[in-house]
Length: 153
Image (cartoon, rainbow, N blue to C red; front, side, top):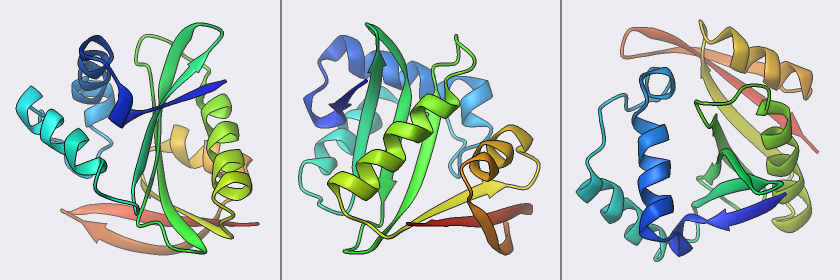
């Protein structure tokens, strides 16, 4: 699998990622579920070039773009993680999680990964549990129950 840094994406791939992010099935599970404009998307990508605490990647497998992984709030030992899949394909969550964990633990040498997931997002919860993430907290976010899960190396 190949990780393509968001800051290196050409216009076609920037447009592809934005279309996935704005897809109703993806957007529903985001903390910010607003439709993102191209202008805001480009500003966000540009901001990533100045930040060492955030990394976003488009993931390619066997010539096909299968989804996005990200690490935010990166410290020397931990990061918050996120993934979303290409909404036109199914069954790639495990592949995305494998590459994310490998990158976080092997490349960044992190010790803890933190995931926030809405309590009613059964598919995401199941995926995190499959990779031995454990629940550490529950809170409310805009009236929706949010679960914090962690994986320790």
